[in-house]
Structures are given as structure tokens and as C-alpha cells.
Image (cartoon, rainbow, N blue to C red; front, side, top):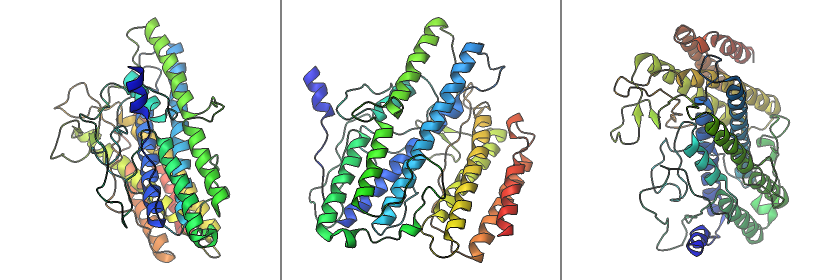
Length: 422
């Protein structure tokens, strides 16, 4: 049994290629970080927050800490996404902020990397621990997270197209990225590989997230990869603040509180994989069509979409106003995150559909068809201000739908004024 488990944890061979292979790996790393960030936030937003939610004072204190911890992990994932974006620019590419909608279909990621939107519970915690587990450490995935069949992403011929890199742990994906960076540095030479503008990246001058730094050479690229892996799975010294250790600690507290109170229910009964559009394949999805929840879901997804647009606009900027524009776009994106959190928290306590009794709604993180950057200058300012005005109007229309939505127009009005003043 132990030998079979060790074999199952054995990582696939790393495939080394050219610059196109680097771009391919960077895009997959960006999508992994992006999807993990969303799934962590979904679980955090499902946790109860009010004093009348049926929790004892001790339970409420613990649940509040868990929410803060999971959101802090999601913020780390955002920092990792920004680092991957800087890596992409460093080798001459553009950041990749697109991703598949939830639930991610089998075959898109390796069979052991299942990404879904699920409420906070014991199985979801086990799944997060499984995803963040250190390389070579066997762990059982949470109940309900395994694909029906194991599969291997492979190709019959490794040629000019970038090759699919399979991996059992996220750290192995980054190990593949590290080896390809080293190989490409030898192949092209450092001056020819790191040809992207450092000025076009987002660094600590624009965003105060731990570890976010600009990348100009192989050494700074490897440092970025090391930070991502250590924050997630933990360093060889087993740092206590790694994502893996933080999730394990939450699980220990959860189990203790559940033993003390078998009726302990820290989260709302939110939907697994909510969707805002009627799906042609409804299996494992919940169509949110209760009128009030559908309106709030539409608003929250629009906020999320605008947040992504602002992140996109922050990258690739050069010239006299680059630093000021990056800081403004990142600051506005962070402001929208607070609006998003309030809307998503409200959704978690709202019924999803008359067809799904006892199931609440949740933020689906529905993607736009494209998140390519707007043209700069007057067009950029006009488009951003226009959309922020529309979002403010949406917030005003929803003010009476839920107590958590009152006053959401105010931060949006401030952002409108900021962009109209530029």
C-alpha cells in the first residue's frame, strides 16, 4: 500500500523547451494561481460573519480568524499571479489574466489538480491541503474532488509546439518553470532572454504585497519562483506561515470545535459551482436564478471583471506617467476587492433558486470573453470612468437587496472621481 502511494506521488518528467515553452508554462502558472485565488475566496466568503448566525462566541472568534487567514492566502495567490506576470514581461511576453470558468473541465489541468467552487467544510479544507501539499508528501484529497478517471496529459510528438507539462503538485510546475528558465538562459544568453521592459512590470513601488518584485535576470526570476513555492507548500525548514501549514492549522481547530459541538456549522449552505447563465450541461452546477440573488451575482461578477481590467491596465506601461498610472490602477483594483467581498458575503446568505431549496448563492467569478488591455491615454481614462459609473449605478440599485450592500456606491463614486480627475 505504501509503495503504491509513493508511486502515485512520483512527479512526471520535466519537459524542457524553448521560449515558447516558457510562455506556455507561465500561462498555466498564471491560471493555477488565478483559479486557486478564486476558490479560496469562495470558501472564505461562505463563512458566517454576523453575531446572529447561530455560532457561540468561541466559534465566532475562530471562524473570523479562519476567514482572515483564508483571505490572506488568497492575497498571497494574487501576489504570485503578479510575480508570474512580471516573469512573463521579463522574457518578452505579456501577462496572462484569462482562465477557464468554473468548474474547470477534466483535461485542462492535470487529473490531480481539480479546481471547483465549494463552500467551507472539512472536504474543502482537505482539498486545499492536498493542493498545497509539499512535493513528495502523500495526502488524500477531499471527498468529491477526484476526477472520475485518472488521465495523463501527453503528446505523441514533442516538436515546435510547446509541450504539456504534467505535475502532481503545484511546486513541480514551478520546478519545470525554473528548469526551463535556466535552459533558455543557456540557449539564448541572458541578454537575449530577458528582453522585456523592467519598467513595464509592477513592483513594490505600486503594490505593497509581500514578495512582489521586478525581474531582470535569471537570479531574480529564480528568487520569485522560490518565494512562490515557499509561501505555498513551505520551505525545507517547514515555515509555519506557509499555505499548507495554515490550512492544516485551521483543520485542527475545525475538528476540535466539531467534536465539542456536533451541530457546528461555520458556513452558509452555499452552492457548489454556482453559474449565472443556464448551463447546457447542468451536472455539478447550480444555476442562480432567484431574482434578488441573480441581480447581486451580476453586480459582483461585473466588479470582479473590472478588477481584472484594472490589473491588466497596470502592466506593460512605460513612459513619464507609468509609475503614477500603475499605482492608481492597482490601488483602484484593491478598492474593488473590498466591494467584491461585501457583495460575495451577501450572496452567501441569499437563496440561489427555487429549484434548489436550502441552497444559497455564491460568486461564480464569471470571466469576460477577453481581458486584453485598453489603448492608453484618453481612451483608457474614458472607458474606465464610464464603466465605474455604470457599476456605481448598479450598487445604488441594489442598496435595499441586502444589509451588506448598503453604501457600496460610495467607494465606486470615489473611484469615478479619481479617474475623471486624471
